[in-house]
Image 1 (cartoon, rainbow, N blue to C red):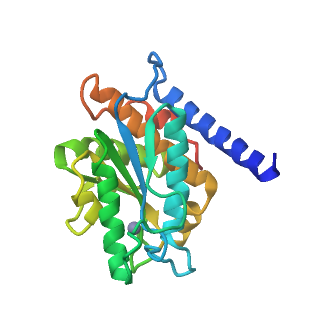
Image 2: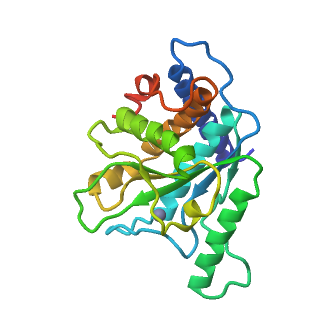
Length: 253
Ligand SMILES: [Zn+2]
């Protein structure tokens, strides 16, 4: 077996263990059960890809690559915990039809195909991963957006709160409904969240977003929040913050 294959196996195992630790601690003090809800497929969307790199930082850092790094980690952690997942892209590609010719046609086709890939699932949940950018450098902090009001809002609120408490206590942002110009989020009918993991325009936050350890911590918080949300959905409804922060606090300093 080639050395690179061993590294891949080892890194996947390490990610899985981290996810396991996250979920075990998440339910600290409770009976630990198999967390993955049956009959749901979690569709993970690494935003942009191919010719559409998304936001580009002043140092040339491209959003689509970080989206993919975080999304792959999220996929591994959720899969480790028995969730049925679908990763919309696992390479730096656009999902447009072969007959799309111009950049505009490719972008439109890509977004239509992503929406179709979500909506063709019988019982999906969508997690879309993006990075933020703003003309002024001082803005920072992850923010979670949601679609389909009552379906997505409690999930987004829980994820936002866990990201703040576990990774960035200074972050005072609140979850928000997605704006009308984000095609994918406005063309799915399932519960859906879009996580803007941080601002590429803020040099300090950009450095964190490029760090593999921080990318894993982000993915673990998003994964644990999903599991917590679906678990509580089956008990007393969405919304409790539970113990997530206890465990994930200190994962990243
Ligand atoms: Zn984006």
